[in-house]
Image 1 (cartoon, rainbow, N blue to C red):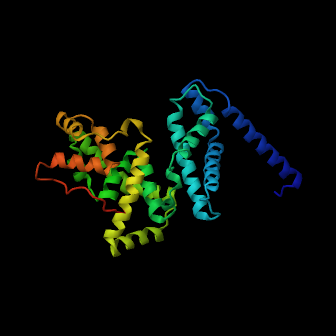
Image 2 (cartoon, one colour):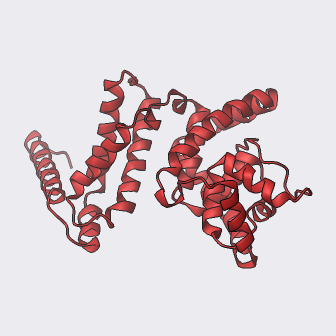
Image 3 (cartoon, rainbow, N blue to C red):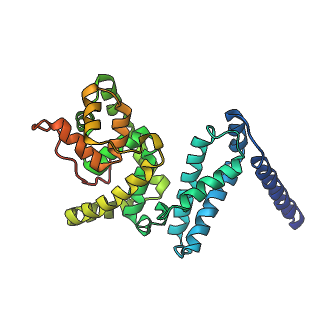
Length: 293
């Protein structure tokens, strides 16, 4: 059916009216987590567009925006990242106005002295790849365990030995690795927009110049790790050597060990030294990037 110009105009007006109504609801106070869920579930496209638009505007204001596909994918990726954080933290922030909460979350990220999303290397294939897997690790245990492989070349047994896990936790590590290989990695690559040609080029660069490639990867990995640790305040603080030693000796903090060590090379090397006892089961951790699972 071919719409007349009048019908198309009516549909546009109706769409604008619906959008205004949706934004208006988000501007109202919600008092319970259930109210928050209902309000935002009906407005996800509006919220994503808002977060993406803010990111684009900030990049333009700082002279880091170009009208091309790479930048468009970049702001969409970060808009989705901000929206995901908003959905996770919003239920614990009630009573609140959801629209203002999202605005404040995005503004806080963009008001840091050196906001991570401004880093020019994030627009390169290597930057997008590392940002994609580290960002995913902040919200997915499968991706978190996958970081041990991608950043350091560890397998399940290495992770278990490094973190000193017990039997039940050890079985979960194997399941995490399997799910990440089967579907998690590909889903993360699709979200970031990595093409097969870009992935092959990264692998080729590593084969041709492994030392240079891993050095460049370590620089960006450390930067990404520091940024995403701050998204989880309970896991952010690095522990001193005596604190790590006490944790391993007393047998507690399994979740903390798994989360923090994957996102902190320095603490990982401290934990490795404590557990090695002169006969290390795992080689000293160092960045040896693996592109594929």
